[in-house]
Length: 317
Image 1 (tube, rainbow, N blue to C red):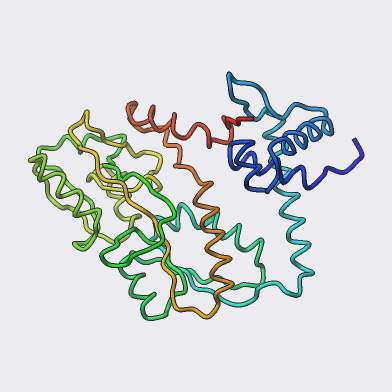
Image 2: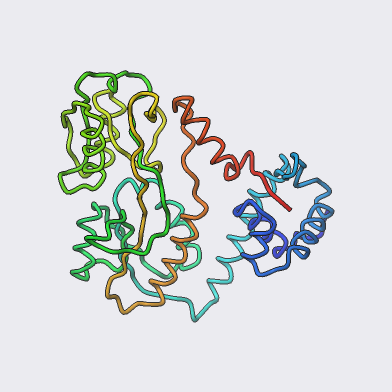
């Protein structure tokens, strides 16, 4: 067991864990599927432990596989940092990115981690504002990139991810049963607010707007306190929240896109590098597991998320 682990094999192993598939991993790292399978067999022989176990037609990471994944990520990260420290051609500079606070809370840690590891010489400035404001900052050249909610009439964007829009209440209160529904929503220009009100009017449901804010944190606070029902994206769900369904009289809301806006920056190479990391981050981040969701939604969400959950990762050959 004294022979060092092969970094190329570990990179393949990580690709399988991130993509959930031997086939997709082979495409990501530009290897044949047979080469990927061979590498995994050699890696299992090297550590003398099985990394995958059969589950019907699929394969899951074993407990040893989960353990190795932690070390593999550390080793690849350290390797990349070491190489980057000697790279005289590495990108340098400063880039400004903006996004709403709910996106920052959910997506920014992964984006920053990926980007900073690969580009340690680039300074990243982050602004949290509503999508409408970010569009104006892009136009004024005060931002280089912005992650925004899709609104093609105002700011056409390159869509990177699609999420459901959900009616959300407190798991500990029944405020959603009030005869006149209290709402916590964005300001009058918010597309989610307009969609919610249109749906309530169509359903002939009485409502009153109790809280208004651009901040997702404020809306979430109103929900968790049991004071109002909010309309939030799946990425903004938190423990203690409950998703309301048709069974409780709340009709489905439309899905929406999360897109990227590019400013007129002269740092094209840095912008492209950051966009690549944003795309990769949004592809691998799954919806947050909310144990307190109502059974109907939780069952559907569990089936949807099972493949991306690290502890129950399903992998096909």
